[in-house]
Amino acid sequence: MEKLRPASPSWTRGVLYLVVAAFYIPLALMVFESLRFKEISGDWSFSLHWYQVLFSDQALMESLLRSVVIAAGASFIACIVGTFSALAIHKYRFKGVLFLDYMSMVSLVIPELVFALALLSWFAFLKFPLGYLTVIFSHATFCIAFVAMTVTARLNTLDKYLDEAAHDLGATQLQTLWKVILPVLKPAIIAGFILSFLLSFDDFLITFYTSGPGTDTLPIKLYSSMKIGLTPKLHALAVLMMVISVGLILILSRMKGVRELLLNEDS
Amino acid sequence: MALILKNIVKKFNSQTVVQDLSLKIEDGEFFSLLGPSGCGKTTLLRMISGFETPDSGQILLDGQDLTPIPSNERPFRMVFQSYALFPHLTVGENLAFGLKIQKTPKEEISERVENALNLINMLDYKNRFPETLSGGQCQRVAVARAFINEPRVLLLDEPLSALDKKMRDHMQTELRAIQRKLNITFIFVTHDQDEAMTMSDRIAVMERGYLKQVSSPHEMYSSPANAFTASFLGDMNVFVHSGQKVFIRPERTLVSLSPMASDLVSYSGEVINKLFKGVFWDVYVRLSTGGVVKCLVDSKNEDMMEDLTIGKEVQVGYSQVYAHVFETE
Image 1 (spheres, helix red, strand yellow):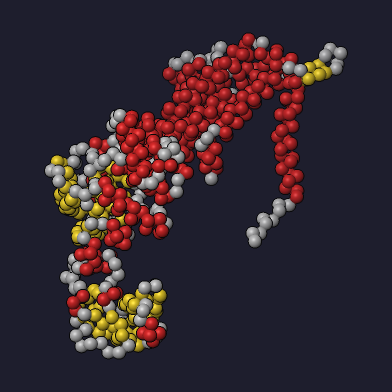
Image 2 (cartoon, chains in turn yellow, green):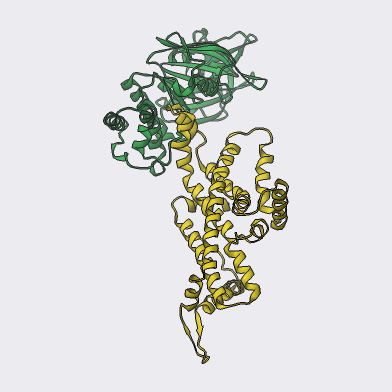
């Protein structure tokens, strides 16, 4: 008979609950505050009032749209560059390929502030006006590594002779790419896209340095409003951002082929 | 009408993997390239398929030089060791892949896919994805995906090595049957001598880039051309007789408790092990002159096997008729 694994000491479960509580209580409080509407009399009730206020705030809604456009643009660029760089690194074991591989990961570990400053001075050097494009370009740079990572994870699980098999069956290089390689990588590319979208959507520091006048994204807007004072409207805005992020993660984890991919990455 | 390899040389960096190799493979032949790993057999196959380019030499099909023709335009199809089925396509779509590329009419594609699935007994699996198939089924799909395009030559790179023994035995017969039905040339790379012997019309044995012998399985077994093929294909006992190495097959090596007839070459020795194999016993004898030889004793010989206990002094001998002696290389 199979022996049962020894139970972990009971205090470990206590620690787990504490950690979960420490993590979720602030979030719960935020959701609660966003839903609480105080009457002048001092009584309060649950209502969607602050969400109404939020959605009727023209400037905020514009920055939300801007955030979405920037996230989509940056993710799109990152997907194209990331996928092809992963393919190149995987397929061609040329000299210095490992160095390149490591270099593409540098953006994951480099302090964000350093990176933001570097980008800012780069744009200044190029005399490139700060605006939509600079933000999209900056976000794309750090998203590329994430796309390359998910695509590489998928490539590692694939039969390495797939392209030769397609070629052998008469396909040209381009047909092999369109009919075999890209379809097979599709879940990984979509996962990379969603991850990039989230990173870009959440990003504050790099956006703060590289955005020009009038291109404030939602996190920037949230930050500048916070300086004036915490209002229930800001809570509603934060909840909205959380819902978008968590929603995307949920879609991601339910997608066919993506789950295995994320699990693979852990090992 | 044949595939001719002429003075093929292939080097990787400075290491020569295939050394001035010439070979003629006839139409409709089941031809095996046999050798230990690293002997250059896979490289040779990849040069025929066009994935590698020989450094010198020619590959001729019906007199036409294929060397400048890229792999996707050669009339060959390859079956990969790992099968390389497209995971995003169903079995039917995998089979149709090559035909679609060639812009075959839709009706013809579906007809040929049905026929091919029928031939490999997998008609019910048309809409299944490769990940839901067993190893043997993947193997059959990989073979079907290759032959559905009616290639002149089918190239198989150790296609059975990932299967378990029972499945492998079954697929050996099945592959051979498919080859007979289609009547196309199969070039089969393997390191398994039993596999090569059972399936092939002819075998080419390779060692370290050199072609050692090309002949039918029976001829190669009964009259090996050199010491390497002698011991690589089947078992061989090595005796030393008047300073020369003499190779004898175990089934031609006699063992006896009494002295041997005078026309036989005989040695004395001691039984060190006996293994029951069903039809035969494997009896291992250490010769007094050194070295261990294996003799096969018919299991029907029950009295003798009872006397042949471990540690027993015995006589081992052979007839000169079955002796293979090779020039040292």
